[in-house]
Length: 266
Image (cartoon, rainbow, N blue to C red):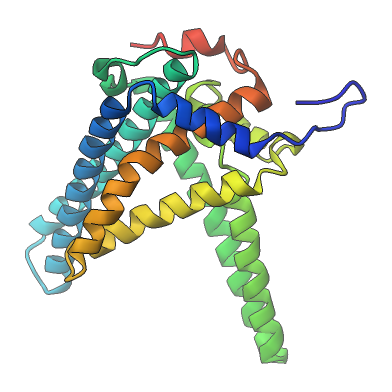
């Protein structure tokens, strides 16, 4: 949102969170059931991938490579399916509608390809930052170990800023129908700055998701269950809040073809 002079007006993150909670309240059981289904599929994919990787490390047959790759593909596909479905449902709920489960579960082929392209772009950019940081740290550490450590710290900060700037990549790619490069540029724009609370919420929820996957096969499985129950509510609320923030920042008809066209894909 901009003023007449062109300056960016800070948006109220608390308002977006309230809208996200209100959207979740339009169909809480459907949102929770869909999140549970997507989460279970994601965890199964992770466990299959871990099993294949472990067997390969222990000298198992090459067939376990296919198992590891299949688990990786299943985990990625289920994660994309879950987030795109929650985004679609949030869009409907923010307009005071009640999304049907079939609307949450519908597969979006074109949006999935764009998200995979976005993931590949972010992986490449993160890799370039890591390699550059490692090379600089290696050269500086020859001169002074402290400078090498400082380079690593600055590199870590750059990675965090880079990834936080892309918090709106999901709605930009799915709703805005932008390609990976345009979505990356738009995410880095001045419009998306000043959203620290929502950034931190997103990062925290992703961290909980990773922690949940790590805890499942350990003696702390009871804690994993508690975290999972919390995520059944927190994840849909976070996606709906993100959708509310996207609407406020970019407008409901931002992107190629507008929102209605984006959600009419079959």
